[in-house]
Image 1 (spheres, rainbow over the protein chains, first blue to last red):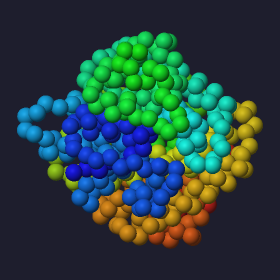
Image 2: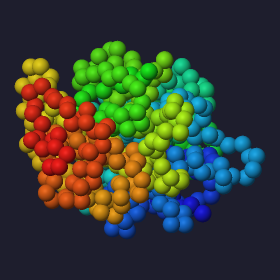
Image 3: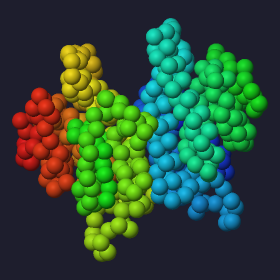
Image 4: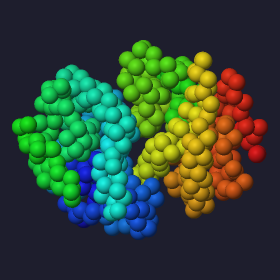
Length: 231
Length: 231
């Protein structure tokens, strides 16, 4: 049995929650507040980053690493003959495109949008006694970066059935995970990106998305449309 | 025939130059100044990031993506029976450890050390007319982060033959690539990290490192020990 150490709004954790749900892999969730830098958590992952997947003495750290691990091993744990989503479908070139977009969302989008936004609007306020107020200059920069990223997602969704090509892949889960965290905070001007919105509606309608859409943060209400499938 | 679009001091490019050298894969190098954001380069990689590997209409973007691609395909292009370095050796768990450390260097170390350091000390000064002077506060933060990373490398090198385990792997190339860029700028206090130094000496003695150690940047001399195998 797997245990996923995660935090509910953390987009990297969300990417793996989606994957575990999508692949139908039994697991337990354990919540970790990454900003506390607990000694026990750092012993698990010296990077101090979420998510971490554990089972029987095996420790797998980081969303892209967990996705690669599950892509290599999950079939062996599967009921024979049951069809399931492939995280890295296609040949080596198609898989490179999935990985490029995975890195785009887990790396570039994270650096330019999610990480700063969550620090300013969530992690800063959840720490007791921090008295943190979001930095307006940082939020302006993040929103400008977000517009550029949304245009790119809109472009990809316009050219292809799924973000990395004709098949659903880990790139879609990584992207949906990051967008869902940003959308909780009501930061996405969906009306300007209709094709991206239509792709995200398709992602939202997948059963694996349901637990994410039911998440609540203490003291921070989600966008009114956050959990709506047709928004 | 592969073409690698790179920049000489870029650590991500260096990781793939090491891999191509180590695997004996024929290739040409094309240098790109990533801060110029040339339209042709952005058409190749919309992320505007190095390195990019191209061949016969195939475009593979990003160091970890290229490494995965070569791990999947390079054997097929190889002379039969020739032994070669495996980028991702071992079983799924061992490969997860290689990938964890690869992400550590290409992600965390990059964010906390190399990216800032190169921006302040190299990219800022190479842009004509920029008149950029390194920001002392940024350099202080980077050096503090670097000490923490060097302790971790020292710890890994003390516990294991190579960074990710008993076998040389892409994690060693990613780490050596980043350290080599930082070492060019004389930022590593090697005397405090003797086991990390001994691991890096072994990396330096590999033929694939030679072209990197011969690199020069206009107007920025390397550390006096930069190219010395015994330093």
